[in-house]
Length: 119
Length: 208
Image 1 (cartoon, one colour):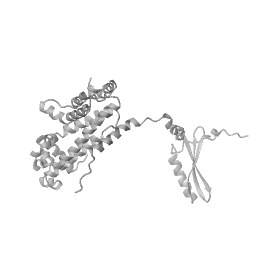
Image 2: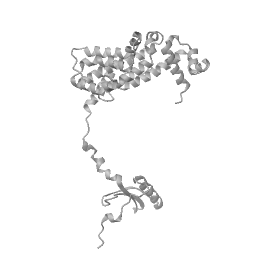
Image 3: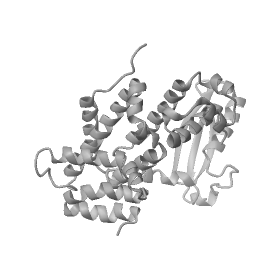
């Protein structure tokens, strides 16, 4: 029968040394390391609008994330594309529902938020 | 939680080993304790040696978990948490010490494995002292070899403190056990170490 693997005491001691040294080499991160998270925080409260556009023979699905109070602050991303428009529309709805904070779609952008000049 | 028959056999065996000693327990007693027939017991484990091996396998697994609890956090309470686990282990498995010498004769493989665990345990205690020196919690070793002796004494306390209290007819509570270990380290604390001990470890043990 094959004998069980045994770690030599010297090697085990070395491993414990490495483990202890971890507590001296590991340093706390900077507050600014988490900036990316704070910078993207506004995306939590966005109205999500799906866009399906014909492009190069396929139907491209894009999602537009607009701040629900300041709609001029938005982010548009192309996600994927489909050959069939029906399928593209269906997938776009699912994507929007998945991405939106409020799945019922009550978080919406009002037209007055754009402050459009009618003259 | 539902237990398999095998688990019930192991637990009952540990209970009987603790009270009667490994050599004095018969298969019939184990079967009675579990509430099954000897034939059924033999279906799960063919003889007593198989049960003893399975019991030790369980012990080794539990012991490995304690050893894995090494420097999971940088403070002194890490050792305190490990001491809790050691106390629970040695008070639940008293037969290990009672039958240590008997086991050496009958089950040499088991003893060889135990020795592996013991050497790891000793190394951990020694390295922990080095780590505390590096963190400035303990004074540097006053003379060469003192911390080797100290770690060995701590090991002796962890392993043999419970049986010696039983022998003296004195209580073997967890807090007394931990105090017996910490009081050996106490003289080597730096002011920083002592302040961490009194603020982090002592309140957990109900000392002071």
